[in-house]
Image (cartoon, rainbow, N blue to C red; front, top):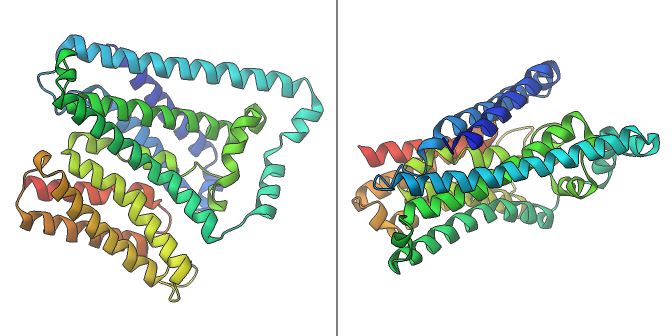
Length: 343
């Protein structure tokens, strides 16, 4: 039962996110955010349900003692994180409510107004935002490589672990730790802005304008990777790179070279769409070839997977309006690749 604290935190976030979304449904529906935020809540619930099965999904020989250690370590880290946040939020609530000047200064409407006045939507800013998303992939590949090296050296066997259980344990702990940290901050920002410490407010200086009144895009992005912990590593890696890399390339190429808008009332361009599609094909193909030992399939199936993921990425990028592509891209491209692999 050492997994229980982590699962309960995830389910707790589901409840808090759902309550917030339903409570503000009129405004959310008006701004076309309601469905997207409902899906974020569902992603938290899904993660809470499947978390107990993640570490052993590719490691059936993992001993119960080793599994308990992984669960316990992760749970302790998250409980400490939640405790620090609770103390921080309570402290800022007390000092804000006992000092009218601090409360007046910590007004979210004021922050939004200043943010809009200083907003810069240029290529340099976009590259910076996309790099932060791409950092998620660096973490995944670093932990996988670390696990592979330690496994080849025989270190992991001494701990009763293997590459999958060790690498995914690190990835999940860091990934969910990131999600927990920012979802606390987001719920405070959107409900009681005065509860946020000044150091946390600095996180929001680089968000997009369309994230001012909803959750930041990084939260559903990470949560949407969760189901693919159960898929072969190349699919998990490809999903992460498509969602961050292909989207980043499409956005950057569209901003720098795009001249033909996909449709009215959108900044997306044909040039960006084509660049993102080509990047998706290259990602799936190269990842499948490079990590072939962990997904030994024929080259014909790899090409089919690459084309299918490319087509879905381009359709999502071209036609999705009210649901974040950080949710649809990983879920749809990932499940299609997984289905093709299983056929």
